[in-house]
Amino acid sequence: SQQGEEDPQALSIQEGENATMNCSYKTSINNLQWYRQNSGRGLVHLILIRSNEREKHSGRLRVTLDTSKKSSSLLITASRAADTASYFCATGTYSSASKIIFGSGTRLSIRP
Amino acid sequence: DAGVIQSPRHEVTEMGQEVTLRCKPISGHDYLFWYRQTMMRGLELLIYFNNNVPIDDSGMPEDRFSAKMPNASFSTLKIQPSEPRDSAVYFCASSSLGDPNYGYTFGSGTRLTVV
Image 1 (cartoon, rainbow over the protein chains, first blue to last red):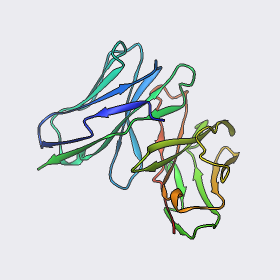
Image 2: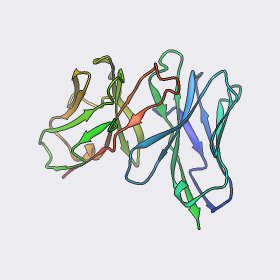
Image 3: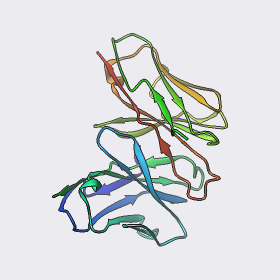
Image 4: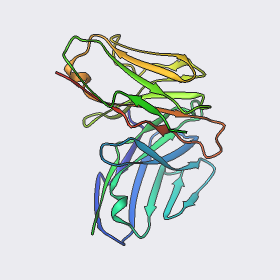
């Protein structure tokens, strides 16, 4: 079963704009991770945020975590054509931090 | 490191045949995961190992599926007999909880088609 649900399911924006994707989950977590998957490829780890963190940055990526709302957001600033991909959130629980469960993903398309 | 290596990249087989998927994790990673990805069900965790020992196989759909990890550098996922509904992309991933940035490294996947 899937723990996380991404919103929106699909997003299309103009190159240079910011893209925001959201993830909601059901149970208490130890960590939340974001991954990118280009068409026909494996998933690539982008960033991990722990349950005691509220915000994290990595280059053009900004992740926030609100454990009271059981939600996270991924912001990609100044989007590029190469950012076109599917983005997944994944959560690890305290009882099994090593085992992460993936959400359904957001398909992001960047228009030139 | 060459990353997580999966073989074959593509497999087409007839219903009823045995299929074996292979994975070589990143050296030093002590966790190995097998996932299946379909349009309908998304990414499903099938089984994972820690230090070559199966920890959780609750995601394995049926007894037709089995997985082994005979040593730290090799794992197999076997389907016997295969059925058309097993058609999917199968991913192997490895990780190390000792990595401060901790995350999974995925292989490129095996696209399985059962006809």
